[in-house]
Length: 209
Image 1 (cartoon, rainbow, N blue to C red):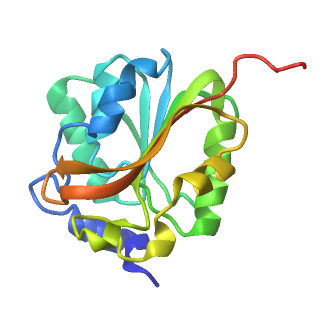
Image 2: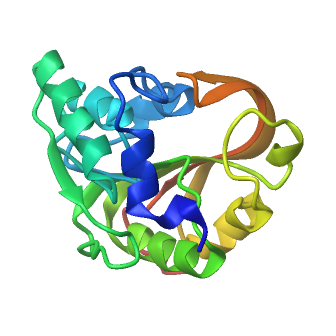
């Protein structure tokens, strides 16, 4: 079993006093936050809460989901320290149900899953968006292990843009790119990194052509 799918692995990683990936939001998420419509936001594989807390500070009702109770305990502490509400759910994404058309935004920052599970979770995430709602994702690509600056070394866990576009269905693509950028997020992500960035929106109306 890959240890990165074991809650005990993440509880151990998040068990210290510091924040492994820092307390500032992911740079890509921060750059597109204004594109998330008002309303509730779901953050998947949220870890210690840096992104969820940032979005809560922008006025969203945010639910953070992660398999690590230690990570979400720190997420709650971060939110309380910033004076913002945050709902947390300890759950394995293999079992977590996403209600259809319930969310203004679904966020997945550095969520790396086996391909079959990723396809299932992304299908649920796309279906979970309200009309006009957006999906935001940044992840490492299969080129990342050569950089050695964070993320899994198992390339099967690292999606390409083409895979994500196929797996997210009929969303409108506002940002869809692969690039190399300098990622500085705590001690866990440090340096030039090969990433894929996605901002995709559920159409507000059906194209009747």
